Length: 144
Image (tube, rainbow, N blue to C red; front, side, top):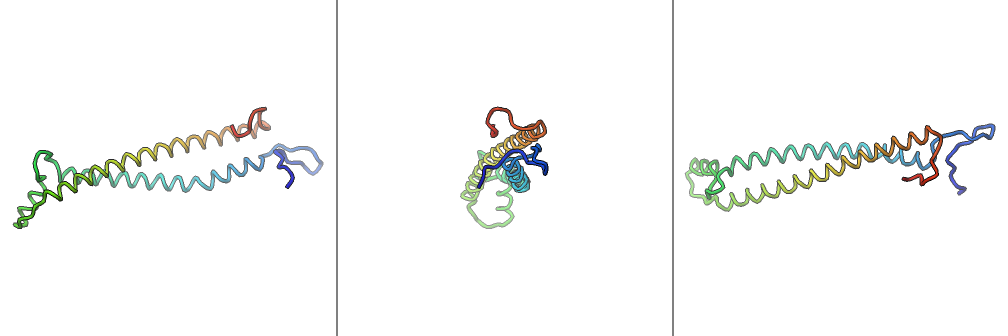
């Protein structure tokens, strides 16, 4: 394959300023990935909201850290009139709460990285468009 040129040639043989194949590919790739990143971001938001709600519910169940039974679980136990030992379940709930908080932190970090990546992509797109409009690349590397 002959080398890809960064300028198109008109019918008269004069160079015409236009996007290079590399720029077109980069823009196409960005447009292809943008919906997936936005969908992932919306799912991360939904998961974070559900985790906050779950954490609030777990907090309601385990509000007394010094008591072996949380008040809500004690009330349920008394209503059942069955001698159930809820201590293992309270421990499981507290462990689940800890894991939810951990996953929430991981999701927040991932969302922040996605936000920074999206910002970098937008910045690079603006920079490349400005270079295309000004008539080409400066004497440096076209990728930086």
